[in-house]
Image 1 (tube, rainbow, N blue to C red):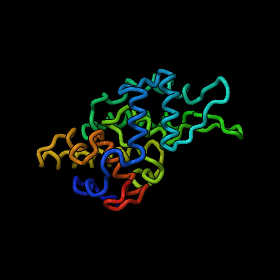
Image 2: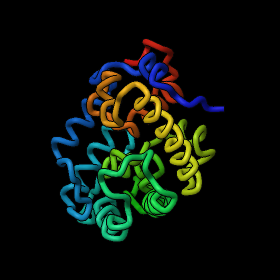
Image 3: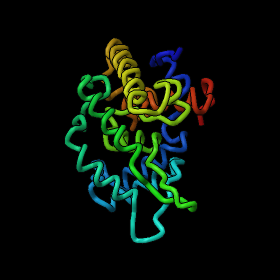
Image 4: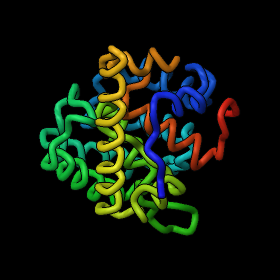
Amino acid sequence: MLTAPTLSSLAAVLPAYGRFPFDRTLDAAREDIGSTPDLGNREHAERLRRWLNDWLCRIGYPTGNEDLFADSLTTWWREFEQSLPPGARRLAELTDGQLNALTSAYGDLHVRPAAINRAGRTRRVGPTAAAKLLYFVRPEAVTAWDRAISMRTGGGQTASSFRRHLETCRRWAQKLEAEGRARGLEAEELGPYLGRPKSSVAKLLDEWLYATITGGFQPGEAA
């Protein structure tokens, strides 16, 4: 049974901003691509592949003129951008309909082709990269995952698993925001309060899951 994080347990586990390795790469990606990425822009799509690989997604680079990843991303973005929740919508505020939209977007994206490996087989975008891409374009609303997290929060990596993951994280986000209000803190103040000034509540939950599941950190050990 997963335990819902509290502000106190987050404070005990999460390090100050900059101590997680992905803090630096995420900052660099935001600076490189900007605060409003346009995945219909092939240049943005190509740059995101590099950053995803820095986040250990291992997406192959094209060896010829065809770029499956950029093609998949630009096509997917044209089809799903307008159905995604507004950029400022927080995870705690998501309606069931907006969860459905994110689930559909994930379900379509993670099976799209990304590269051809040396054996000539097509590699898909994959569950981890798809979740991280959704977080990158909707950082207030999406808590990303990796394989270890997905098994615990969703019971798998399918679209329905991703919805269960988001439902759990939405419930946690609502509890954290309520706890924050009881302390006189608004949602946007929770990250700074915890020493994570660039983290939305959704990102704080991602960091909690990474630290406690993937990293196996105990209080004070995350680095």
